[in-house]
Image 1 (cartoon, rainbow, N blue to C red):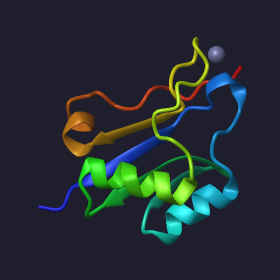
Image 2 (image 1 turned 45 degrees about the vertical axis):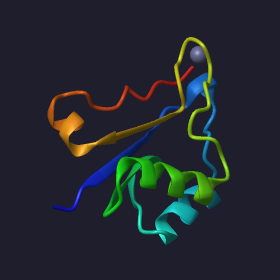
Image 3 (image 1 turned 90 degrees about the vertical axis):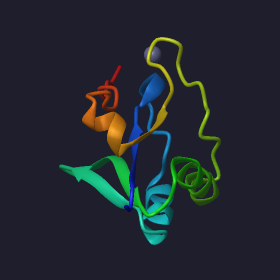
Image 4 (image 1 turned 180 degrees about the vertical axis):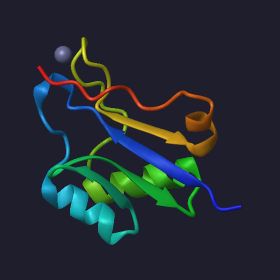
Length: 97
Ligand SMILES: [Zn+2]
């Protein structure tokens, strides 16, 4: 069974943590971008484990996946698997300040 890993971006601290180039680098590696009305909120990667997907994301973006972000907004980068989403533990709301 091929698993899909979901990445969700939270604009922690009121800024976008990924640039257009970062999103393009992910897309070039097979990530399917989740774009709505001109903004990209996340991406899905099928065919890798969660750990593999996170490593690939770090190579593509050149950023640490574990950035803490703003204390009130929480981490900017969130990765989860299908089964967690199906259990209702979906990504945090995208919030702006
Ligand atoms: Zn904040």
